[in-house]
Image 1 (cartoon, rainbow, N blue to C red):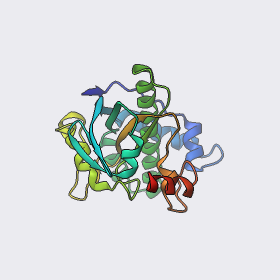
Image 2 (cartoon, rainbow, N blue to C red):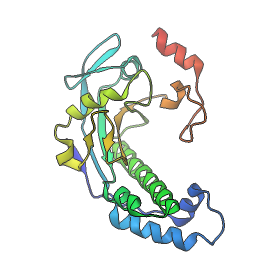
Image 3 (cartoon, one colour):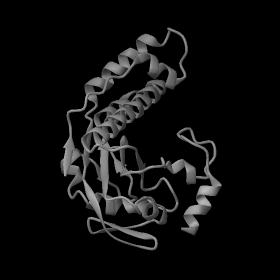
Length: 224
């Protein structure tokens, strides 16, 4: 098991303004103040494992003896040897601070800054995997992002790491949501062709969509 806890996140005020859709200079000082608050409160941490496939059959795949049920996951891991289950977070203090503001706009801005910071942690982690394990391309899947791999499978993913709350301060609720909210879990895997959850997701008007839905690919997974 590997723990990354010395991750430096540097947020750029121009980028934050752009993602908040706040144009002009009049909001710059307020955004800079909120960025300073974020820098003082975020606690980026990643726990991950270098895992191996220990069994697969039909719609299931066993990772280090833990069984996951997802046809898409099983197909994506068909030709891989090393895979990287992970859980990452920026901690709870930033969202607690956002909730303490009476100003709804400040709450929204600080919440969005938290999302941006979490994206930075994700980028850091990807680069770490690529460099450390000399990988070419990697893709990821996340429990709950696809109907084929429901959020209930968070329980199996967390079981790979044992006491995640003690390791990085993240726990699961009874509905399998992560606390703190600014947390992400999933599995990275080497791949020759990039895979995105969005390719198999039919949900429309999603702000986080990276690529369009691909019906042909969706049909292909059903046939394999």
